[in-house]
Every structure is written in structure tokens, then in C-alpha cells.
Amino acid sequence: MLKRVFTAADPGRTRLRFAARAVLGIGLAVVVCGLAGHSLTGTVTGGLAALLALFTVTDPTVRGQAVTTALLPAVGLPVLAAAAGLQDHPVARDLAFLAVVGLGVYARRWGPRGHSLGVFAFMTYFAAQFLHARTDRLPELYASVVLSVLAAAVVRFGLWCYERRLPPAAVPAPPGGTGLARVTTRQAVQATAGAGFALVVGQLVSGQRWYWAVGATWWVFVNTASRGETLVRGFRRVLGTVIGIGLALLLVVPVHGDALPAALIVAVSVFGIFYTAAVSYTWMMLWVTLLAAVLYGLLGVLDPGLLALRLVETGVGALGAALAVTLVLPVTTHRVTDAWIQRALHCVHACTAQAAARLAGAPDADPAPKAAELEQLLARVRLSVAPLVHPLNPMRGRKRRARRVLALLDDCAREIRGLVAVVADPEASQDARLAAACRRVEVAVEALTGGRDVAVRTVAAGTEPALAHLHGLERALAELAAPLRASSGSPLVGA
Image 1 (spheres, rainbow, N blue to C red):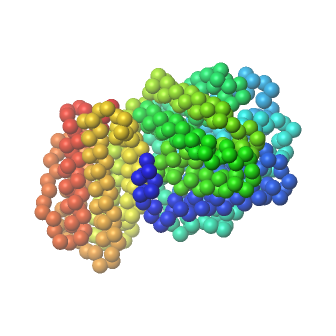
Image 2 (image 1 turned 90 degrees about the horizontal axis):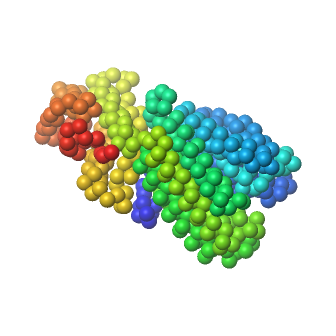
Image 3 (image 1 turned 135 degrees about the vertical axis):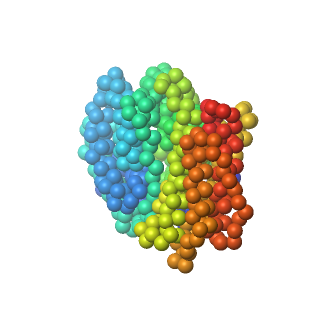
């Protein structure tokens, strides 16, 4: 866990800038709310709105990000009104919460924008429970949300829009299907069922902090697509919470809500959330737990018993998610992993075809976008395979297979990156060997994705850079055939 955070690559220092900008944007939002005379409740609401605006909006283009950010209040304010209006009607409040959970997960079928708006809606309802919002506070809370989203937008799109200098991110479309065959639809049903369990059991544990359990269930489902991914994420959430509570006992409880040290811990926690989110969910949850502890300290209710209750409610929420993905319309790790690996291999095929066309002199051919898409697809493969390579997985054979597949797919990505760099050179030219090598790579991919027993023929590497990368691809694809087809009819990396 330590190695993943401190040795993870950060090309262009993107994670560092992402985290630093978050501290600046959330800090500006809090200052603006303070200058507007908002209470601590309003300021906390505004800080959360700014955090979500900077964290969850992930559209591939800057323009798309701006549109999604502008839509956040349009989704959040009605949800906030409903949550405040139903505070004194527990049954209706709980049913509305479950509806927000289901619709928020279902919205992921519309890609990054649907995901962002779904998260914002859920967290707005969650915040209303956290702050015990009532209708008489709505004007202040509305103003806090709008001002904070504007402050976050000023920082993100005005003061520090580093994305303008980057190519648009390739965002893989979610798995398709119709009805209950669509993964996002099945997850919406699962999340609602898991949240229902968490809500009931969470209220039996605590009539005041039950929403922690629902929140844990919700976040376990974020960025997961299979039973295995959800179970691993639940484990990591509990582990991060345990470590975060330990840090809170050492750092936050002794502070007793003092403003200056609390503000410093908040800033460090926000930075940690944004900096570690992409590489370690456990570390992210550590910082989230620490941030929550500081907020409760500022509200004057923090004590060791409250932290212990948070751990119990988190466990209830993780259990709810585990039961839901196991018993309700389960989506197997094999099904999801197979789909992502197939898409990654098709992307290798498309990238090679574009490279061949570019070398043949086609001016419009460009393999770079496909290479960027391949990186995103491999990130999804790693997430999907995570349950199989987890240290606690007792199936050593499948673990070795999965690790071998990941290593060989990484080799493919490395050769693709090299090939893209070579064909970008205007001096690069076509010859018969390059055309033949490109075709062999395409045939190899077709064999692996089509289930045909087509042998991948390798030849001695040449000195031409493009040819060397193509031969490297051939070798990696040839070696992939064994772990992907360890036995006739077996799944790619395990069930």
C-alpha cells in the first residue's frame, strides 16, 4: 500500500496539480462562504460542494467539464430541498434516499456526466443528513452551494486550467447491453438493495449516524463493475477507515476543534484525498476519515466513541454492498474482465492499423488517440483483475495467470507507445516488412479475440524502430495466448 502511493508514476505531475488545485479551490470556497456571513453548517456544505465539483467532474474535454460543473446545482438544489423537507418524516426520508441511490447509480449509463451528477445528488442528500438540514436553512445552504461551485469553477477553469494544455482524455464507454443485461442497470438494483440493508441495520446501530452506513455502501459501488471489484473495494474502505481512525485519535482528538490546527489538517486531508485517489482507495479513505473527524471536531461532537461508531457503520455499509453483489443480479469478475481485455486487444488492433496506414502515407491516419484509449482500457483491466491479484486471494494459480496477463498487456502498451512515437516522425517510411508485421499483429489479435486457434508466428527482430516495436507486439501477443487459453473453454483470467 505504501509502495503504490509513493512510487506510482505521475506523468506531467498531473496528480500533484490535481491535489494542489483542490486545496486552492476548496479554500477559496470556504473563504467566500465565510465572507458571505454563512454559519459553520453553510460553510461545511459549501466546502463539500466545491470538493465534489473538483473531484467528480471528469468529462474528457474542458468544455464538457464546464457544462457538467454548471449542471451540478441544478441537480443538487432540488435534492437538498427534498432532504430538508423530509427530515421530520423518517419513512419518506428513507425511501427518498434509496431512490436517490438507485437513480444516481443508474445515471452512470450516460458516462462521466451522468456519474458526476449522480454522485453530487447522492452527496447532497447525504450532507443534509450529516448536518440535520431543515427547510428554514435552505436559503443559506442554496447560497453556499452556488457560491462554492462558482469558486471551484473560477479556480478550475480560470486560475489553473492545466487541462487546456493536455490532449482530451480517452474515456472508455461503459459496457453496453439492454435492460438487466446492462451492468449499470444491475448495479443500480444492487446498490439500492445494499443501501436498504445498510439503512435498516445502520439505524439499529445508531439512530443519529445511520447515514454513514448508506454512504459506505454507495462509495463501495463507485468505479466498480463486478462482484470481485466491489468486494475488494469494500475491504479497502474498511481498512482505510481503521487506519484513518487511528490517525484521528492521534491528531484530531487532541486538537479539540481549535481553528488553526483544524484548518491545517483539513488542507492536508483534502490534498491527500485528491493525490491518492487514482492509485490507492485505502489511502483515499484514510484521508476521508481524517477529514470527517476534523469536521465533527469543529461541530463539537468528536470523541473516541463517535470514531468507533463510524467504523461499525462503515462495516455495515460494506457488508450491505457485499451481500447485494453476491445475492442480487451478480456480475462475475470473469464477465467484466473478459469484456475489458477484449476491448483492449481490439484497441491494439486499431492502433496497429492506424500506424500501418500512417507509414503508408495516409495523412489522416493517427494512432495516438487509440494509444491513449488503450491506456484507459488497461486501467480498467487492472481494476477488474484486482480481486484476482489481491494478496488475500487463495487461488494461487489464477493469481499467477492474472498477473501474467497484466504484465503482457503492459508490454503491448509499451510497444504501442514506442510505435506511435516512431510513426509520428515525418521521416518514417513504409516498406514490405512493416506491412507484413502490421498484418501479423492484426491476425494475432483477431485470433485471441475471436477464439480461433490461429498460431502467432514470430520472426527475428529487425533494426528498423517501427519493425522492432511490431515484433515486440508479436512476441507479447504470442505469450498472451497461453494464459488466456490455459484450458479449453476456461475464462480468460478466472471466474
